[in-house]
Image (cartoon, rainbow over all chains, first blue to last red; front, side, top):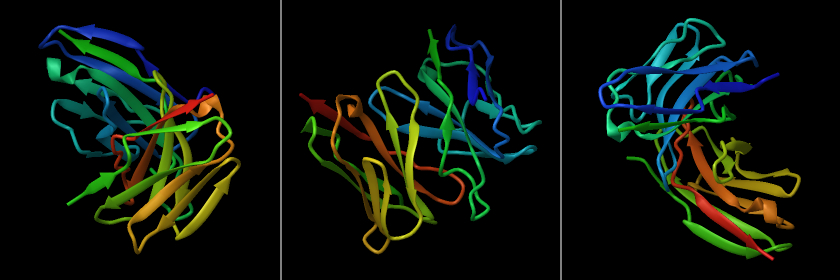
Length: 117
Length: 108
């Protein structure tokens, strides 16, 4: 199993450009999420999904869109990049626990380091 | 509201035991997760406590007291490779709330 994969590893954008960060997992996890991590900070949840066709906003959703058309893929779209979106972006997936809920045991991808100039 | 408190930095000697405390205030609390993150790396899952008490996984143990809104991560027989950031993350049933984490430095 490859686990959670993210592409690209590094990206530089100009202000106003748009792009999609790719995330895929091969563990058949229903739950997937996107976080951003800024220097000296914890991870802040951007969007999450509890299954194909279902997405919801996290703590910092503004400026980002997501969709979940398959169980495996959960892309994150930056609509119009701003310098404030310079960050490291992590995608994660989680199995559904015995309670029927997922999200407490998350497996993270290697991250995408994004710089917006 | 929601709040999360962990010490920002902890230093300990190789071979010692260290405890990282976490106090939280959150709505819809289901349990407490712990994650480890090395510099430049991705977070990795360590443990999850849904019930009060101690969970042991090798050299690491995690404790939860729901009535006190308190938990801790106990690391025994510290090794140099344990130098990393450690995050407690209350789980609300659909998402984790990560704080700023505790930076642990293990010295020889």
